[in-house]
Length: 235
Image (tube, rainbow, N blue to C red; front, side, top):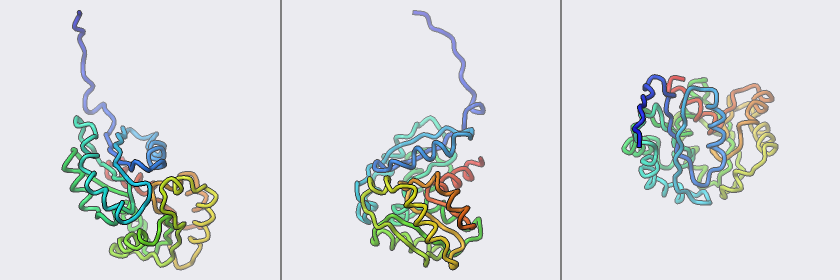
């Protein structure tokens, strides 16, 4: 056997490492974020977290116990500029600070964000205060989500929901349905922006169409998370 010489890539030559924790039931977030970061000098490392097939306050709260184990599965050799926890509604119930604390206890993350924290940051950055909120959730999940926005000083008086509890069905709501519901809701004059909640909603292709029709800021869980992760990583 011959021992062959080798050299190591310098840290400066490596892409910026980003971490992402995706729900087991989520079919949308991972492919959408890979597309969103495709042209950026980053490497996106993904871990999964156990999640239920239905979305209820109890199933969302149950994920808190698994955040540490999921973050622990990200490669240990890397220092992450930011790690995103990919659930909007669970972040409202568990709390952004609790999510960040658990992620940081298991991996080297400078920053931790989630779609709720990202959406609030995005809205404030763009001077929004009155959001039209389109959700796929049942009322028991919508209530704490809207309360979290209210606590951050953002009203969601203009509100609509698909009322669907099954994750698999949420992931299959077609773009035409999302477009129609978003435009009908967002054209309300009492809203200065529109937020489409849930990482499992397929929003990537329809956001520009919705914004063109409404003429006001339009963002989703996935687009806000992408925006905030890029900001945290100085991209």
